Length: 196
Image 1 (tube, rainbow, N blue to C red):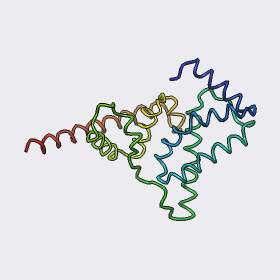
Image 2: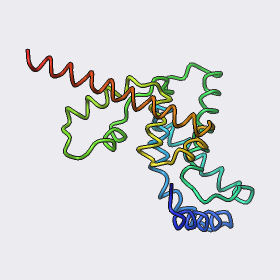
Image 3: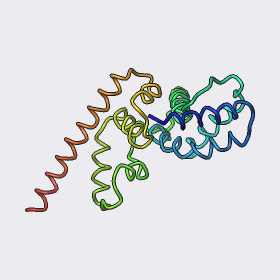
């Protein structure tokens, strides 16, 4: 959970943006774009399409700024907004055409996986972690991304995913248990291969 000081700073910056302060808006874009882009890759494989969706989100926010509610947690607010926009866009694209840019089975993102491991882990271990993450469901990978890559609290994740806090705890617990089990199986297999 962010500190009360950080929440107060977010609230002040958000109110300045809502009041038409272009510098505050630019600082929000600068600070949040990368997190939005990394989260968006959970839904869309095509980076150009994702960039367009994020650009459209920020354009829409600027156009509607005077109608927006206040928030003291900008990142979760933007993540939820982007998620809703991407899901609607995906649904629209599915109705119009068989658009191949959408990613049904989320592939691991090297940048995201590199954040889960420490710098001393070798590239080979990174590939093993990626392969284990690939075995999780898209929802499990999404919740792991929000928890460990975006550092959101369970309450914030609950808001972003529009599910209850107990559901977040259960889903996260299941995802981590499955990850640990599959990681152990991968290590055991590797050990067996290396010893024979």
